[in-house]
Image (cartoon, rainbow, N blue to C red; front, side):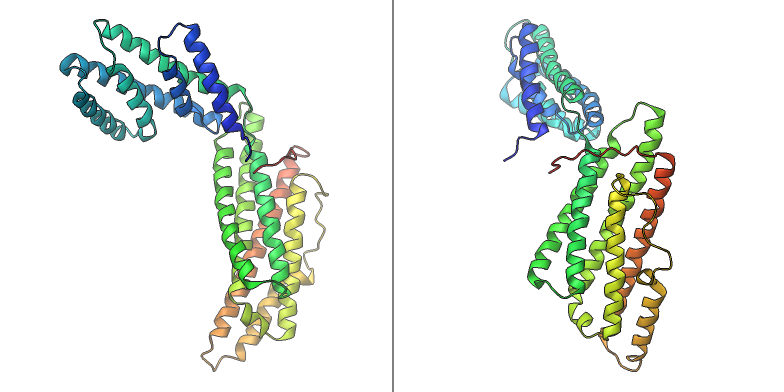
Length: 358
């Protein structure tokens, strides 16, 4: 089990909220700690959005608590009724994420007994807001997340695994069931890539130069993700139609293998080219035989003629494999164009730290 940054920051936020609440002589510092737990977010931008929404949610909870206690008292049935109203108001205002903290505010205020109700309500509300601001401060200062690192390495690791399986599949040197299991894992990895992309997109830049650079990076990372997805689609086709591949003419099988070998090699080079680990000049020529999509397509058409008079699904399955390879190659070529263009404007500005991103 790994002690992640968010776990560590939650602990720091609890300590800070309790310390500040005691420093300000709050009678119930535990409510500050509870609020701090709700307010921790994975990015600074989300933390900012959360603090704005939670202020609104806390005001709803506090106002409803004061109204219900002054009008109906604080009987437990009244507390339940007030909770229903608070939930409905949060839903109406699209503050669903703040329902929990609004209810904490509501209950913490409504349980107060005595004549100085308004004063105690203000103290409880302030205590809870101490916890919210403590979490925001921790998110801002302690271990700001580097989602670009996480995003790049997740794409790189997923791409590497897909490429390894494609290389084995074209040589029919793999376990069918094991590949089926790994394809499901790769689908989950792609979902994680999408999450990291959104996190990185939400990170805000404070200088115009950085904003422009990041905008271009976002385009590249989106294309990296799309290219990895097409590679995975190609792998799925190779796995699903393994039997059809085995029955193709030898020259056709060889052409598919050469095409894919060249594609995955270029894909690997582009991932390294982006972070400056290999020269930015292309290491292949446009007319390279293994990148000749027309030849591959012509081979398919020739092969198709042999089945023109037969209603054989083999032809349609082969067509899906060829179409997937061509689509994958176009995505790789587009990624190459984007990375080359990026380095023309931002030479040596990609900084990816070696770290464990899981």
